[in-house]
Amino acid sequence: MTNLFTDIAHRIDNAHEGFTETLIHLGGFNREDAIKVKNLYLAKKLAKIDIGIGRINVKHGAYLDQDVLTRALAMANEA
Picture: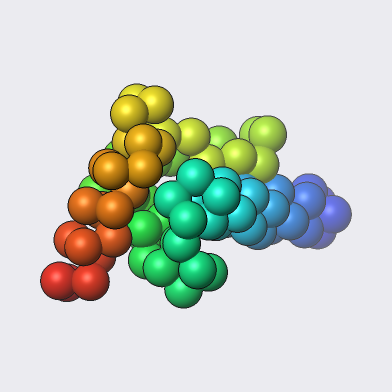
């Protein structure tokens, strides 16, 4: 049973890391800004963690457009 929880925790960590790397690549952000956008998307439920496959998925692909990511960073910085 402990191994199951360890596996789930590992997949969650991989999901966060993978999505952060995606935001760095698509948005041209540094790591700190990518984490701010990731946290905003998760808080506003624009993205969801799928622990079964260890990935964070956005509700709509347009949320990954560079101009949308830039506006999301501006919103995250305001908060």
